[in-house]
Image (cartoon, rainbow, N blue to C red):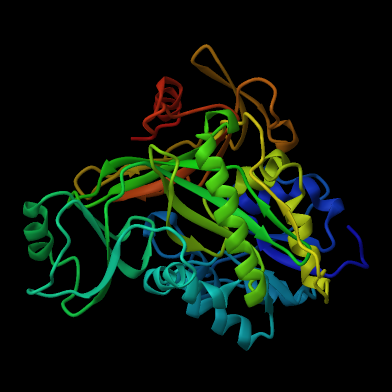
Length: 446
């Protein structure tokens, strides 16, 4: 720990921040990790990283399905602990539902926030981003803004409806036939007179990319395929299950050219607007290599843990160090450096594990799996280490990050763990492969 470095408070309960700790000595700020005192995960920190524990009044259980950040701000002594550590910068995990709460909390306590909260309301708004794409002549699905009601004029199926601030699957409705149009109206899932984005379905591979727009560079990450599990209860969309990075050699060469062109253009526009930082985009790659932009998330995403851990996914750049250095930098370089799609063969994955609890069949967590690195060999998993430095590119390894709590009863479906792998867990269709299924069966409570 360097007493001369300014400190940034981060939530150690989130795996994306845990893996940054391997670079702790190379960053322009000191990261201080805050953990809920009864929560696991501390062993996954680098030995050089500082951590501080805070406490909830009355406890907190993930099974409650309350937003963790909101619960922490309202019901713990986190604020007091941050001030005791003389920390003025906080790097929270934003989502639409906790946005206002975090901003109010930061303002009331004079904390500066790391990230792009103000841009979230713009770029994550599907209507705003669709207009942005139209304005700059960037290819996207044919779309239309509608007001939802009995006389809504839909495209011919299949098409997609999205609420302006849809998040993940929530607020996104995939309509495959006319019967589903009627079922959606009867479901009551969308309020009358709601503003929606309607776009025609584009057949292709659902992908994501993260770009870092810095004061000196526009850096593209490797792309990943988005993978989905079972349909939701009304069958209008599939639940997001995880993702898998795509080896450069497996990408259509026309798509490579289009990806570099489109995201260089977007990065240049963002930089002119003064929008800097990490931006994740969802897009479709069609069979002929065209790409269709869908949405933008200016924040840490599901892919961030692997992106931050393996520099090859940013072409060898230490993206976190560049991002944090820009907080202190005052001037742009006049000439911008563009780093195109990285050429590597990494096919690691992210898999979210779910407990299928219900009121009729609740699940009690009696004993937890250990956080850390496991080796995968011949269908069996053996624990290796709690040191994330051992999560490298050699041998088949997974990183297991648990969020379940012993003694907790789950009465609904809840995500309880994140799996990161350095090898594929999905097949070419985006479904779990045999190794992915083995992991799902091994780390199982219900």
